[in-house]
Image 1 (cartoon, helix red, strand yellow):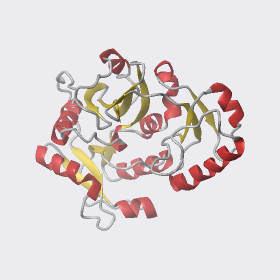
Image 2: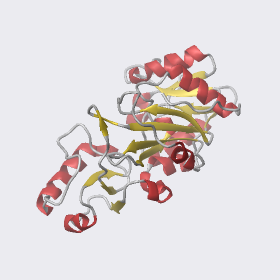
Image 3: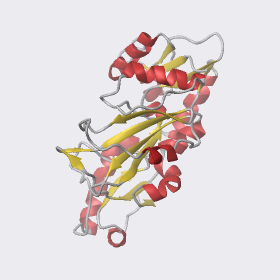
Image 4: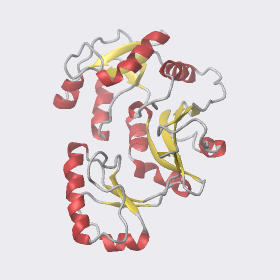
Length: 294
């Protein structure tokens, strides 16, 4: 049974929660269902030192709500917490499975974009890629590069020289966050409603559909992902994970991303208190309500 939520601290104070997670922290307190433990953000991410605002007297199960870590770092984090009586419900194996998309790609293959994988820092033969994909995008095993001049997608006009230049930019901006290898993914033409794509994030908790929420700022009257597609992926080998679904321009739906639940953000329109109540009762084993779109 889960009674503890683990949050990272503010960069500036190990006694205060990370400012970007303040609303989740407040919601957890409001539910009254969980204990809260804070670990030192700067000490952990900069110095690999685990600093907790308190250590439980007895072993407790916990869910982390925080930021992405490379799998190797998460494994160390998990073990250090165990030595301090905190058992994260997401094991390193589960984290590795859902955090690195190539590890789960074969399960989604018929419902997601086609993909090729390449080693880091190895020149990618773009002419060969262009023969496979009309349009394609670049990401590492976890994330694409957003918020920069890096292209959303490439097509048949890109030359090897220009592509190599863009890859140098990719490596530069991903920096220490670079993870695994390079994924070249088929670029999917998404459907737009008033300038917004139609994406949904589904949280699966204890292998049940817990929440289904609009995840791209779209209006409420857009199409919803098919229930049978959402249910199809409710039994993956993790107790806490997310899958993102998007509507394509032709009205069909695809899986566009997956992730570990601990480091997956809530949608901006979600009721945060409701989310944490759902999390509590899902792990408690109570019979869940029929999931609701929100």
